Structures are given as structure tokens and as C-alpha cells.
Amino acid sequence: MKKFTKFHRQIVISYLKTGLLAMIVSFFLLPNYIKVTRDGNTIYTVFLNDKQVGTVSDVSSLEEYLEQSRRELAKESEDMVFVDTDLQITGQEKYFGLTDSKSKVKEQMLRILEESIKTTRKRAYTLKINEFTVNLATSEEVRELLQAAIRQYDTDGKYYVELVLDPTRELNVLTTAVKTTEEKIIEEEKEGAMDFQAGVGLALSEMLSDIRLEQKRDFADYELGLMDIAFGDDVEIVETYLTDKELTPLNDAIDLATKNQEMQAVYEVVSGDTLSEIALKTNLPMEAIIEMNENLEDENSTIRVGDELVITVPEPELSVLHKEEVYYEEDYEAEIEYVYNDGWYTTESQVLQQPSAGHRKVVSIVSYRNEDITDTEILKEEVSIAAVPKVVEIGTKVPPTYIKPISGGRFTSGFKKRWGRWHKGVDWATPVGTAVMASSGGTVAKAGWGSGYGYVVYINHADGRQTRYGHLSKVLVKPGEYVKQGQKIALSGNTGRSTGPHVHFEILIGGSQVNPLEYMN
Picture (tube, rainbow, N blue to C red):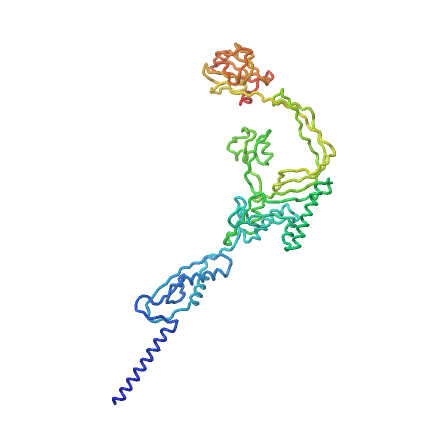
């Protein structure tokens, strides 16, 4: 009985040892089980955007897995994808548990990222024309918009638009190059002999063209039509990423860029201009011009040569510059011929010969900005009837100027009807004894008592005009004396037919009084 018991114990011990050894081997060799430790977390549950990814025993590589999943998501499209990536980890202390493989964790992360996409921004292009911008889906749409702009004037399709890197910019900004279709064909030729032949052919063609230009050409020798075309505004194209809502349909973008808009421009006043004439020239209502310019109060506001007025003109966002070689026949005027007379003032002139129009055939290069002609260069002209020029004799001497005869004073009466008769000058109320000055340089014709004028001074001026100063208290000059402009000639007073201390001032032309205010500076 004792022997059996001893043997039985040995069997039980051997069985226990074998089982324990098997457990130890399994624990260390199987990868999906964790080691048993008695301190800290031993297993972790991973969540991405509040969705369970899996269970791991090591969290040190989770950020790397997430980054790899993001790259994998980006590979699936050229678009720019925005996605939430909120990674959360909870740990537990367990002696025994299953974990997920690396591949399964990454697969789950990718699936959750795909479900969490917030927005997708597509590769797009922003076209900038001065301060105007428009977003288009592809570079081909950009090129088509630009092509549509030149197609308005290039009806034969002679020119095409190419997008090229802007050499003046450090970043990758595109701009435009407008080339002929012939240039495009040459650029597309293969390298080698064909390129060489094409290059030689182009060079010979240019040489022959130069030779033809040097020879006398008949009207039939000119090609006529569009000679050159380019954009009249700075154009920039940049690659960007945008949502569908931020893109403009191509046809709408073409309309925005090429249709006429109301643009502000500046008009410089030239000799002979009036507000009404400027309104006709610019095809704008006079009221609109006055409203746009703060310095203009009404239609009677003074404008001077060189003044700049703000106006609005119809113009597209993208302007096109183009040159056309054209043939036409026209009646024409010869340029005015001037004969200069040093003994006359610039205000004096006389027509010596009346003009008559001529007739001619012309080939010229006409330069345009959109529809407006900016320059004309005549290449060939054949006159059938010569124009007779207008010949005008004009003076060269600068005429005298006229200034107010007193400093200060209160304007009391103008050149108008007063008390039943015409008041033939202007009055300024001023205290007796105020200095009265010569309005312009000249010779004193009269100085003394003048009946209703009281004490008076008359001065004759070089341009044939005369000035009179009345109701003086004291005369300081004598007849025959030459006085300069601004020289003190008298003191103001209240003599003669006067209702109070003032200065009466007249300007006479050809012996008749005129409104002095129209001639004073």
C-alpha cells in the first residue's frame, strides 16, 4: 500500500511539472498573448475619433501607425483631404489577454479615417488680373479663359495662350505668353535635323521678309489683318486647393473677365474743353461727372488745362492689346501751319489761308486697347487729292495780366444794372486811405478830378486795354508816368458820386467797359 502511494505521488508531480512547463512555453512563444506583470497597465484599448481601433500591449508605435494610415489615405486621391484624428488610449492591468496585430490596427485606423473625412479640397487654380481674382478647376480652364479673351480679336485662331513660369517671381507663379500657331509648330518639332531645318527656314523667312520691307511695296503686297496681340494687364496664376463651392464655372468666369465693367479712369482737361464737351467726349452725363469730382460744384464750375477729372469708362477686367494692318481710303485734313508774329500778343490771330480736304489711300498699323484706338502708324500713303492746309498768323508775346487793385475790401457791387442804369465796373468797400495799386503795368493816361468819378486814375496797357480807378481820396501818379503791376498809384476815398468809402474799378476794351472779374487773375 505504501509503494502504490509513493508511485502515485510521483505521477501527479510529473503531471503538474509537465503542465506548468507547457503553460510557460505557451506564454512566452505565442505573440497574441501578453506577459504577466504585477505593476502598471499591461494592455491598452485604442480609440480613434471615439471608435475602437483595437487592443495593443505597446503604445509607442501608435502615432507612427496613424501617420502611415494618413499617408495611405492621401495616396488614394490628388485632392487635399481634411480629416479628424483624435487618438485616445485607455489602459488596464491584466494578467492574460489577446492583442491585435500591427496590420489590423493600421487597417482599422484607415477605415475610421475614411469615415471621418470632413472636407476635401481639390487642386485648383486662382487667376489674378490686377485686383480681380477668379478660381477655376484646372489649368486648362485658365488657358481657355485667356484664349477666349484674345479670340474676340483673333477670329482666325492665329494666336494661342501658353502658361509659363514667371521669371520675375521666386515662388512658382505662372504668367502668360501669347504665341503664334507657327511658333507652336516649330516648338513641337523633334530635336535634330528637323529642328535645324525649321530654324533655318524661319531665319530665311525673316530675312526675306526684311528684304521685302526694304523694297517698294504696292498696296497688294501687304498681308493686312491681325499683326500682334498681348494682354494689357498683369496676369498671375497660382496653384491652390479649394472646395467646389469656391470654384467659378468656366463660362461665368469668362464673362466676368472679358465683358465690359464700369472702371474708374482719369480725364486730363485740354485746351478748349468745357464740362459739356467732356460729357460728350466720354459719353457720360454732366451730372455724373460733377458727382464723381468733389472740386466741381455745378455745370458752371471752373476747369483749367491740365486738371484731372475722375470718370467711369466701360472696360473689361482683362484688357487685350492688339495691332492690325489695315487698308482704307479717306478724306483727310492737312496739319495747320502757323506764321509767328513777334509784334502780336498770343491772344491775337488771323487766318491767312482757308483749308480744304484731300483724299488718300492708306495702309497703316492701328494699335488698339480692346476696342479703342491708341495709335496709328502709316506704312504706305498714296494721295489722289492733296489737302490744302489752314495757315494762321499768331502772336508770340504774352499779354498783360490783371490783378485786384486793393488788398482786402468787401465786394459790394458787380458789373450789372443798378438803380435803373448800368453799373460799368465793380466796387469794393474799404476805409478811406487804403492803398490802391495798378492792376497791370502801363502808362498813366489821366490822373486827377473826373466829375462823377471824383479823383480818378486812367492807365493804358500794352494790349490796348485801359483800367480806371475812381472815388479816390488822393492821386499819387501823373499823366505820362509808367507804372508797374502792383505799384501804389492812389489812396481810396469817397469823392465824386459816391455813397460811401470804396474803390470803383473798370476794364475797357476798344473803349467799352467789360466785366473786370472775367479778366482778373
